[in-house]
Length: 416
Image 1 (spheres, rainbow, N blue to C red):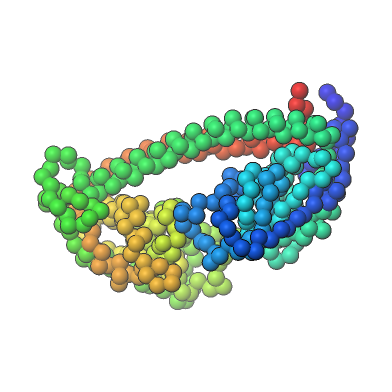
Image 2 (cartoon, rainbow, N blue to C red):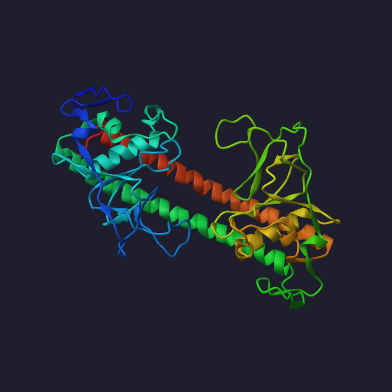
């Protein structure tokens, strides 16, 4: 076992005795070269998957022009030195030339130091947010001078290269396993969506006589089902928490209505909850803002307990005897088929209840609503259990990867 010494860096601990430490400014220097006019260069973004070439056809928020972006050079490091507390990834190794937002900081390695090694080192630091306590201003940001004064471990250059090559190989294998598991999760989620859509639009009897629903995205439905505007079945729940006595704060998250700590210091909460809606079990909550800026998130949730929720959501309450679980699954199917996606209007591309209520929906008889909801509850629970197990596998693999990076970039383990 090789001799170790204290690095003097709290988040690193001991390092090999033959390694040195020095302020970051002697390892890398910041450069910024502005590209006055955009001429079709790759648009690069710093993401949790590294510095990637952005797909400009994929949508999302875009600037009016890419003029004035900075030029990025292959082999340099790209760092986000602001909003350090909330940014999911603050370091990336540039593998493609292109341009990016001038808000990012680009660094060139000095004295022959290996960019890939220091990428992994700062990835380790990013995993733990070890520098967070040093970013004390309002936006949790660093200046170049502040970052430059922070000490880093500096192995001999040949050892830096060996560590980087080893981690490239190991992390590639780990990432490939994670990608396979993620594909399995996506397949399961797609299967769940297809089962729900089939059941709420075709029923459970494959031999039943069908008719045209008159709704393009629904197609044929069982002949005995009804097609009516949503307002026939649901009114809008509008009961304000005027006196503020209700304290059970609820939130719509990933297609589920969940409890939220009303006293939490995390996230944005209002000074008062007097304007929030009081909602009841069996209600259906829909987030109907920014419809065209978001193609992925789930916008519907079934309420299972009395509580309050932001009035920015539309809340539906039954106007007649129905099985709310069936209609929740139906509106979920409308959501994942992106029926709502093209219905928005206004600056924020939103819908209100009045507009939504005119949308036609399909409905079986009451007993069939119950049977479909019961069946889908069972199927969904089984699929979600498998998905949860696979997500746990991903968490274990991710934890192992982080540990591996830490052990080698700090010299706790040696590449042989």
